[in-house]
Amino acid sequence: MKNCNDVMTKSPVCRLPTDSLAQATEVMKSGNFGSISVIENEQAQKLVGIVTDRDLAMRIVAEGRDANATKVDAAMTSRVMSCFAEDNLQEALDAMAKQKLRRILIVDQDNKIMGIITKADAATRNNQPGKTTEMVKRISQN
Image 1 (cartoon, rainbow, N blue to C red):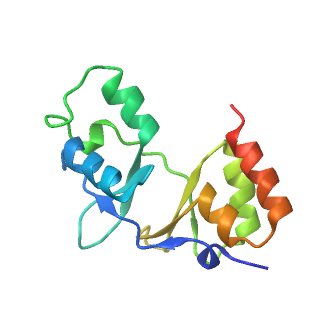
Image 2 (tube, rainbow, N blue to C red; image 1 turned 120 degrees about the vertical axis):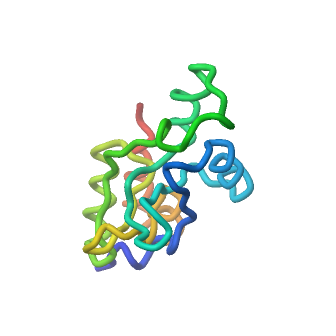
């Protein structure tokens, strides 16, 4: 049985809570990322949140806020679902589906960011097309 390490994208790009949203969105745009992990500092790499394209739309654009004057922590979601690299992949995918999440972050025992599993990762790296299709459908329902 696969674990999360088998399909996760390792070492995701991260930003600090004190970075401007303009910086974060530029990274997201240039890398074609739908989210960016937020870490406490560069040394510890401790996960403190995530900023998604939906967060930006709802918390910044819809409120007419200036991305240059707004910090990442104003848009980030700090309650992030995560799991460990050695966790069972199917359990992580089931948790994503149950919570209707498009991504789950992978951390170590010290909450240091190690990777991310997105719907695309699950769809292209899982080698279980039937289960993957069902999981993607469940996550996408809203």
